[in-house]
Length: 225
Image (tube, rainbow, N blue to C red; front, side, top):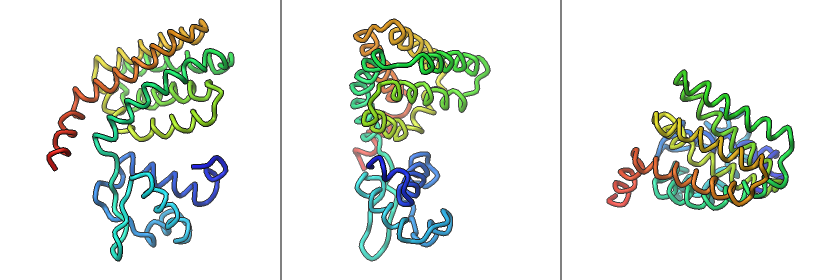
């Protein structure tokens, strides 16, 4: 979506509806009715219809002629592809962050690591997932590239449910925090090569954890289907 469209009425409806699909509020195969959505979001059917067209282009819904719009969601293959793409883009993002990060952003990044540890010790998994997102969003912002920031933010949202599951795995939660700490330190030290390598590996590790904890089985089932 273009930058100025994110704040339009259609853009706001699109963002809210996409979030509801990604977070599982609307399930696979569920019908999305324009009138009901318009009523829920407090808008006319026109911005809803436009948002549905955009969601179809993203592959999150499918439009069936003379029937309506149905949720397709994110498949296991989609998640795997996103992790692969993210691993390369997040490496680039970390590299650029070493050049552009501000003192305030660096402090926020270190604070995110500290708060992750705090909530890990108390098994606050929902909060850990929230702070995990915050850590990455700070790095995206620190890259100095709005285009890269928007692409990675979208990808990060797409795998929301998998990321939430990932931090609930005891060993992965602890390992992920340590990986964040190392990435933050490399960025602080202005070591662009190390920051890129660590960020790339961090996402690949997250992907492997997802495969080990249900994603592989989902992928096999969807292939058979």
